[in-house]
Length: 237
Image 1 (tube, rainbow, N blue to C red):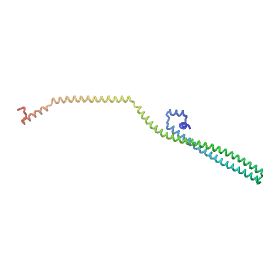
Image 2 (image 1 turned 180 degrees about the horizontal axis):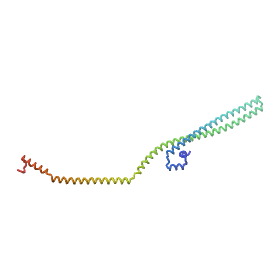
Image 3 (image 1 turned 180 degrees about the vertical axis):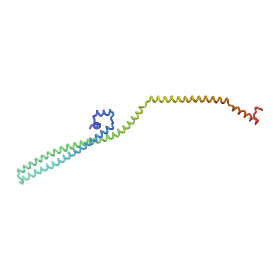
Image 4 (image 1 turned 90 degrees about the vertical axis):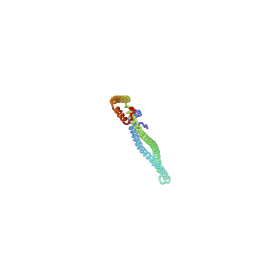
């Protein structure tokens, strides 16, 4: 049985073409499994029918064996009656001959039924092998389907991630980062410039304030007067 034909319902070349066209592998596998199960049902039905024929042939064989034995016994009985005088000898010979003819016909039926039974039994054995093969293939492909679904899920996730990564323009990203770096540097320089201006303005104001301030002079005068009162001002002695 060609599993690819069963699986894809097309020839091997067409199956390869379907794969090249990226047809859904899960759907194809599921369809293949359904086809295998249909084949299994057909083979089971055929098996039942052939088994019935084999049984019928065996029954026929046994029936004709019984008839063969019966005609044989009748021929013997009739001959004995002719021999004993219970029946006309000519008549007994005629009837015994007819019984033997029937016996021969029954033997032919026995041989025919035996041959048919043998043929049907061979067909039964072949169908049973086919059924076991199909069952095994169904089990294998169902396992493959579970694995395939998991692989497709991982593949789709990876493909989606890789697609997102591929869509990122690295040159534009670098350009954006460079612009941001330049912007930050510009802001830092501007902040430093404002700091220098603020520092310069503060220094000038401080110098002007110091130059114009009388606080220290007044403090020195008050300190000198306090020392005079306490007699501590050595310079004036």
